[in-house]
Image 1 (cartoon, rainbow, N blue to C red):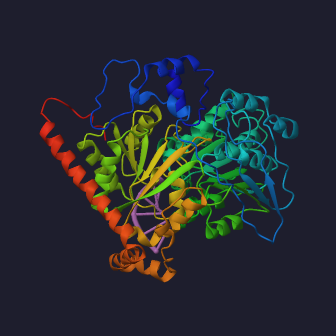
Image 2 (cartoon, rainbow, N blue to C red):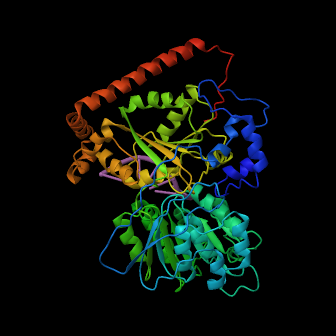
Image 3 (cartoon, rainbow, N blue to C red):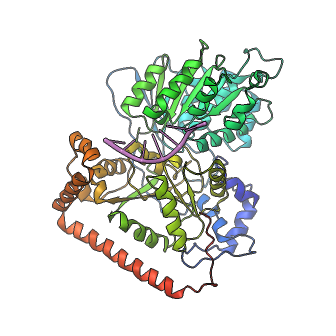
Length: 572
DNA sequence: AAAAAAC
């Protein structure tokens, strides 16, 4: 049980040696795949089948060939391309899946040499034994690509724009240097770095801030740093200057900080390190002003800034670079591209009504829980979760930002404990969240951008594990289909030929989508029709078959259900 | 290009 809890908690690496006995025990039990329609909760069994996550750690998915990652080329500017010679995996058990080797590109002046090991950081930068032993303690054996290049840059107090795929260890890349630079806790008499908070990490969602905080606490173990996950409650305690002067590091969402700044309950004039996680998200219109206000409050002349993301569109990069001082840019693998480890596919569902039957059909076959399902809005998340519960799918959960803080926290912890089999969520879960067990992602609603697509499906395929991602598309999604199809192709999965033959929608057309969305979409649907009439007929027929099957299933279910017999464990 | 998330 303990093993399971550790495994399913984000960031904790699976250690087969340590849990060998448990694994054997569980394997002996031969847990069955969950069957959505039939399963009921075994009351007293030692290990309910849904808790057998060890099969994921052992990697049961079919092997897929890797496509060689390739950097973009830019004739101008100082640029270096290096092939990483070590894998990216953090646990180095011999039977772990090999991490893909990503190409690393650096750009900027006097780029520090990368490190091959964490120990090298002690020799070169006097990284403390304390941090090194905490790393070892939590299973970090060798630096990943972004860690091996990014950490030295930050250790040398340089500004950094880091782009590295989902699940490749970006969090540690900034936490380790920042914690190393903290030195003595502000509360101690030995502190010589002035009073007040010295480091600031900004993230777009509470859940992500929370997760970063957890990672931070792992590294901080054994030291008396005050690391504050900023919330309404913690913000209130910082009204007292005595208290807030003893804080070393704050992790927060931007608006929370802005509120405290404006109330005069916070000073950031001693901040030496600012990190923007999910930088492109933090720099888009809705967050930008808040972020700029926070940065403006960090008035210390030596403030170091770093931005991290798996995606960084050109305009976001421009904004980021303009904020940084003599920055170094590091790109691991291909920017804005999913990992080849994630097997991606597209599923045609004709229209919105066809989605549910398609999903129910999918869930009636064996699948790998927990399954993460993305929808486009809060009400859709709620109602899809309800539909699934009504249809007898066990252990359905829902998470969106309209829920209360407690509901959100509970949903995340159920997810971490492996109690959720099917998690329906909005964009709130799309970025940064690290649930090690997630092997499958379904985009029930088509993602609104390439960035959204990359981050959503990046919830699987983390730390070298394989994953699977399915994206539903309707006629209305046609204008953006080709863009996503190209991303899928780029990352080594295949898409139907006819989709690639779709004409590229012009910028004009896409603009019009906003205004005359429906009419335009219908046009595009016609375009699909023109492209390959036979293919489309097949798909529509498939969709009809699924609808019919679902109708039959519902009838059977209605016929079979007796009032007292079964209670769905409906916790949505 | 557009919704969600941030308090």
